[in-house]
Image (cartoon, rainbow, N blue to C red; front, side):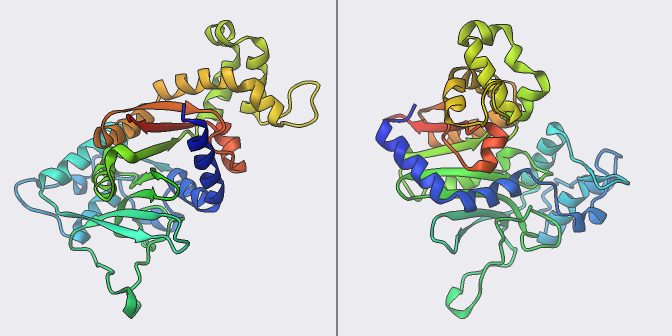
Length: 317
């Protein structure tokens, strides 16, 4: 758990950046833009276009984009069948083995609140002459790939430096694994001392996971946390007041803390994607510990998704 003063600074800053954070979160969890679906073709159907020649033949920017788009299968409906974890890892390994050069671009948010690190092909257009109006078209609210502003971006990471250094918002092209953002963590950490840098991982699937399994009835949780906390956790997961209460307010969230932290830790332990993201940060930042913080992010949208719980990496002093 963070020291009181530092946690207060963290929460104050997170509140101030709620609009930016919401845009980042929506880009992370949303599907690729509907206008791109027609361009996606069948990885699961065995489309040979997804096979990358690794015999010392680096991909061009256009070939890289094409391979990534080809690795996502579109169905007759509006839903997308995204590659599984193994397929995403294989795609990334093929890109690395091909020797395709990649570049890490810093993109200052117009608000000055954060810097977005963007992973692109090294030969993708560079936007460096800001004085001449050469502005990077990156849009934090858009998914990677497709034909939009982020067509050349394959991974994103957010770096915040005020009032302290924190990394969060890792967003990866849906054809690639979380580890594709590792070089962005390295690039951001290189601008500061890693031992001064924290990281945040959001848990936007937590409430749905608790609801789907009705995990407020978990015997182990009830034994460890008690019925009152479990009942409050149920209210948080369902986003509705407890019986006998008219609103879902601070009292319910405070009563739920013990059970909600118990469930949040179970959720993280069972989620390979989250564990992979957390390990990515720890591998670069070094010694430190991950802890689930209750009500670390009280943005209303996020409260519905995760009850405010956030995984926070604190470096070892």
